[in-house]
Length: 271
Image (cartoon, rainbow, N blue to C red; front, side, top):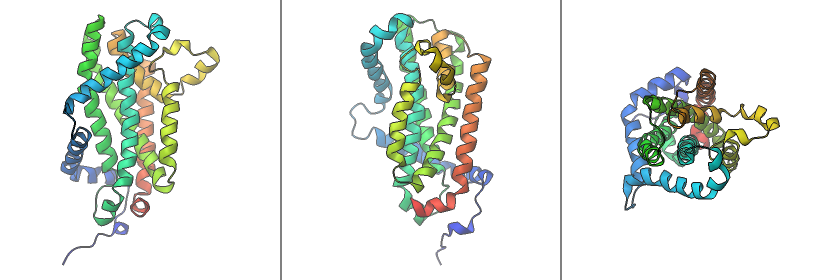
């Protein structure tokens, strides 16, 4: 006799969700592989787009903004591409996680899966893309003559902090999107505004003093600086920057995880 899945029979809590993710770790790996394969399906270049896409974007933005910002920023292509890669991890992963939850709602109603698995898979895919994109970033640094120092080993660590922040953000907006249909469109607009408020393609120093006091409240700014410093400045991020970035990453992860898991049962019937 087939068993009937009853989501109300499970007691959801944050630590329990972590245990469930571990139980379904092989499925999580398959979802990441599926995300990578689906992204480059029917593409002639395939996985090479992971390397070419950020390079082409950097080339376009460099042509557009080099006359404005390049004189004030040494090795502007490195500055631009490093910030762009980290921003893409946060923005694309959180948006993909929200869409994956909504698209797979019917699957969640048919069978049991950890509710956070789609968000974790989306962020895992984003982190893998970031690691692959480090190669063209290093090539650009060599091409423009930026000095490479041993501290570049810290870049994946900074990327991991950004991934934790992205996961918390993804879970938070996914929980909201399951309740309110217009959250997806609103979040896309907010991401565009957020990009222009973050010094990705312009130097932070050009912000007027009155606005600079508010700039430090942007958590992605500190994450970008942690990722950019080892390559662009050739040094580890300062203690204040690192602590702020770590606090933002862990705080967002905790907030998103608690909000999402607290209403995981209800999400099954709303998506």
